[in-house]
Image 1 (spheres, one colour):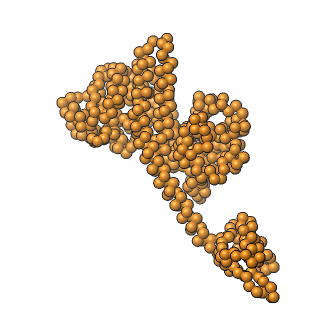
Image 2 (tube, rainbow, N blue to C red):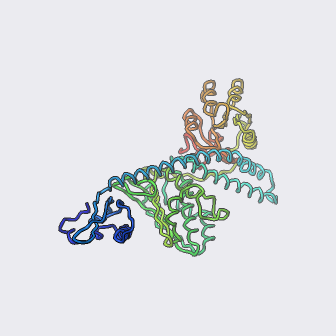
Image 3 (tube, rainbow, N blue to C red):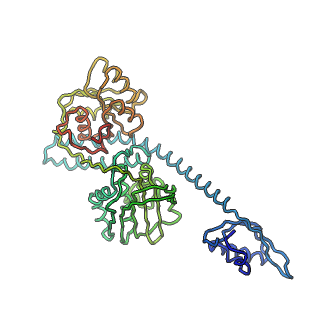
Length: 498
């Protein structure tokens, strides 16, 4: 049972074969039994195999008269198989409960994100128009820019909600974690973090030949940002944060934080700190939405770790976490590698004359009055002729007797037909109609079907003048710099990689 021969066992104390983790418990039971105290006759503990592994046993023991004295006589049964099955069952039940909880919270977060994106559209969109009309020396410009930036920060939080909802994450581009890290280390967010934690030292050890992965740069960047920020905040008295990358290969599955890490090749990201560590009772809760030990007003929303978990899941990766109170924490993230070469895109910061219209006719279809008005005002300012429809049915009727050059088509328009059904009906009468799909929610399967039918792009709300202008200009083929590589995370479509 424990790997010893008879000769090795004879003459030794039974306690020599008990796992140190359970030795105190077993000795206590023996002492109580010999003192005449009531102790259950049957219990379980761990014995120590000769190879150092635990063997779970069931012991049935009692006192007997032996050689004019009292002795303990027990029967030991190996129950390791049953214990392991029960352990696996508990782990599966915990995973199922967690998945159901995350799914429920995700549905809630997704719905909230959709509504918030619609609300934020005016806050993000109208400042562009106001800034265009104000003179450069206007004292109002600073306030309007602040309003716009606040709206964009709120939109970023909505994106976190969509990540939590496991929607809106497009894993189509070839990325390199080294580049993602380098971009973050050169960002204003990291500069601000360094200034606010002057006693924290940041170091990097990046593998030069790190393999590429398929990923979403914006979500990977947010993951790096959250991990590094959490590490810095875990060291109020100062310390060191190490950000490293490496190529890892597993010939067999390896235990991870939540899922077993499957065999395969990975690009690994590690962020470690020398901070306060995570208490064992908290370690199993760190990825739960809104679970935080931070001061909410100062340190965030409680979504950061959930965003990390959602991003890793969407990238089909794995997480491993180790922490020791008072000694620090290490997060290891494993992402499956791809043989494809990296694709680089330039950020969109294009002069407005590059995407001005020339009077082309655009039909804006949206069930939200504010959204119709925002899109109409922006497109009119850009030089387009605009007509609006409040439903898919109204759009179909309008095009029976009118023609336009492009549809700007909202995907979700309850209680009537949605954007896909609207586009399908219009294509029956006007094959080849150009269209752009918009939504405040995410790129759903219905959106992808519309893109396959011929819609050129998917634009996520809230609009900015540049975002909507670039999308329309490119779809109409009127952009003056057709070779420009625009930011794919904002404008996605069938030709986003061209």
